[in-house]
Image (cartoon, rainbow, N blue to C red):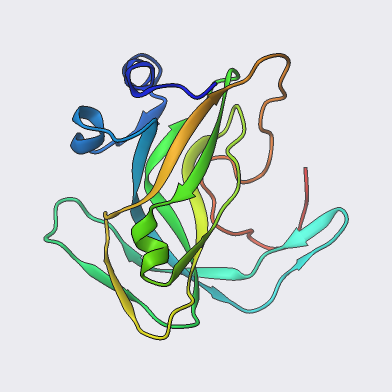
Length: 180
C-alpha cells in the first residue's frame, strides 16, 4: 500500500520521516508522495571496481551545493556527462516502510536521465542518484529545484533493516572496502 500525503505529513511531524522538507511539500504536496530537491552535484574521477566481496567506487568531487540562503543559482548539466547528485532532504525510514524514487517528468523532457534505486527500511540520510544529460544541449537546473518524487510503501511482514555502507548519505567509497 502506498501511503497518502496525510499519513506522510503525520509521520514527518512525529517521526522525522523526511527532514528539511520544503514549505511547498509541507503545505501543498502533489500525488502520493513528496518532491525532493537537488542538493549537491558531484563529478566522478578515475576508475573503480565492483567485485564479489570488495568494491571501490570512483572518487568524487563536489562541484555544486544548494544553499537556501543564497539567490537562485543554476548548474549547467553538459551533454554526455554523468554526475552523482544528492537530495537537499534526508529520509529516516522506519522498519514498516520502503520508498521508491521516480524522476520528475521535466527532467526526461529536457534530456536528463535519472539512475536510482529503492530505499530500504532502516535507511537514514540524504539520497544519492546519478544524472546524465543524454540530450545534445546543455541544460540549466537551479540548485534546490524539485527533481525527483518519492513514494512510501508499507511493508507487510518481516523485513531486514538496511545495513549497507551508504547509510547516512555517503556518495562514494574512501578506497577499497568489503561489501556488507
